[in-house]
Image 1 (cartoon, rainbow, N blue to C red):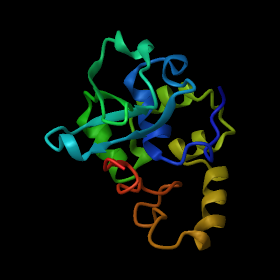
Image 2 (image 1 turned 45 degrees about the vertical axis):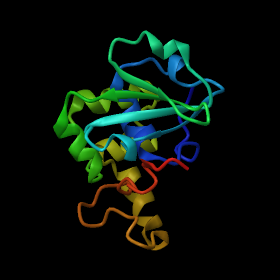
Image 3 (image 1 turned 45 degrees about the horizontal axis):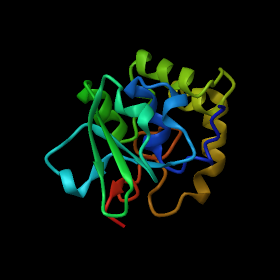
Length: 167
């Protein structure tokens, strides 16, 4: 499965999901809905990703690093994975994608089958190609979506979109 940045509208899916060490074949099925990094029901948890499915994904039930599973009143199933590396998680929260460690970058690139000419590679390694695309799109980045202060080549995660609110 090739990654299309437009397909996944959430940065947690693009940058954090590959870091839980679960093969994408187990993650993406017809019931996959989206990912979250915050769930209002579990505010005591930090440094995790939540994956939402319209039905159970039994492929995930036996994964080693699964922290928990919740089925809500609408029969949607949520799987929770904790991150061991708090620093990587913190870098993600502020949109410092190029500051992720090399191991994390390589996991992301491998997960999405990206190559050195891809936008994803350019975002993680700040290539000239990604810079050009980013600079060309700066004018369309209203309401602070662009990552101008850190000058990363992709916008910061929108925490309101990355939060599960029960809707």
